[in-house]
Length: 168
Image 1 (cartoon, one colour):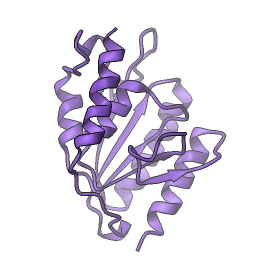
Image 2 (cartoon, one colour):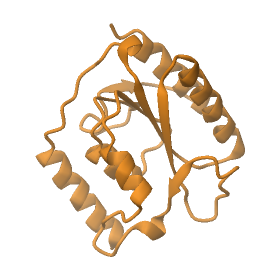
Image 3 (cartoon, helix red, strand yellow):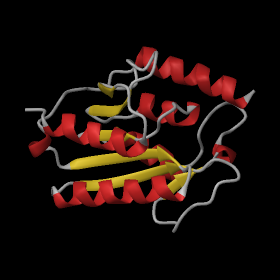
Image 4 (cartoon, helix red, strand yellow):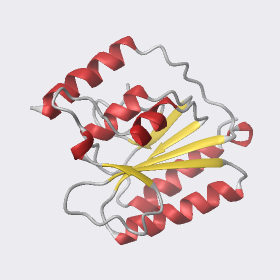
């Protein structure tokens, strides 16, 4: 029931959104958000390496992870939210998730191979100028730059970085 209310709220946000979207050249970008769902240790370490690369490019990086039930939060290194922070009416009550959605990132990288309803709500509410992630049917309202046909998290990250850095 909560997820149905969340989907309704997400669709409403998409219809009413007035967020300014643009493709800023990567070299001019200063702030970057990284958003992902926790899956396994391998994904965690691949994302940590990606964050290091962004920081080496002199970007200020903020990270948020969605922690599904029965998954481990490796290292407790990043801010996270869970489904327990979803109210009956479909509102995400996590302060870190809400602050993340309100942050005006130059780029927001969404690193999941399959879309997640809770994370899609944050993407819809995001104030980021350019949201980047894997292509999925119906993804156009959520992402400005979509990477198609990737088989792994590493391939997705490589594709997102490649195409984002080519924006001029």
